[in-house]
Length: 138
View 1 (cartoon, rainbow, N blue to C red):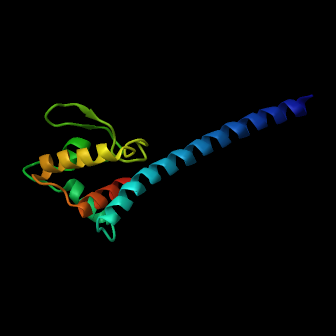
View 2 (tube, rainbow, N blue to C red):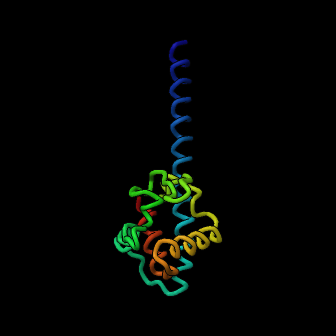
View 3 (cartoon, one colour):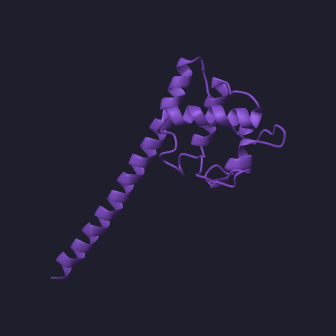
C-alpha cells in the first residue's frame, strides 16, 4: 500500500508544478501580447525598429530634474512613487505587472501625460516604441 500512496503524492506534486508552469506561460504570453500589440500599432504608424537601448536612455534622461525614473523608479520592476503627490505607482515592467499594458487607451493617455510632464513635450511614436521595448526586457 505504500507504493500507491507514494505515487499519489508524486502525481499531486507533478500536477501542482504543471499548473504553476502553465500559469507562468499564460502570464508571459499575456505580457508579450499586450506589449506586442502596442509595438504593432507603432509599426503601422511608421516605426521600423524599436531600440531598447534608446528606450533605456530615455527612461533615465533628465529634463529640469525630471525623468521617468523620478517617479517610476530606477528599476522598472520595483514600485515607484510620484515625486509630488507621493502616490505609489505599480511597477512598469510587464514581468512585475502583467496587466500593465492591456488597455491601449490608458497606455496612450499615460504616455501623453507623462511625456508632457517629464520632457515638456509629446513623445514621438519611436520614443514610445523604444521605451516599451526596454520595459518589456526588464
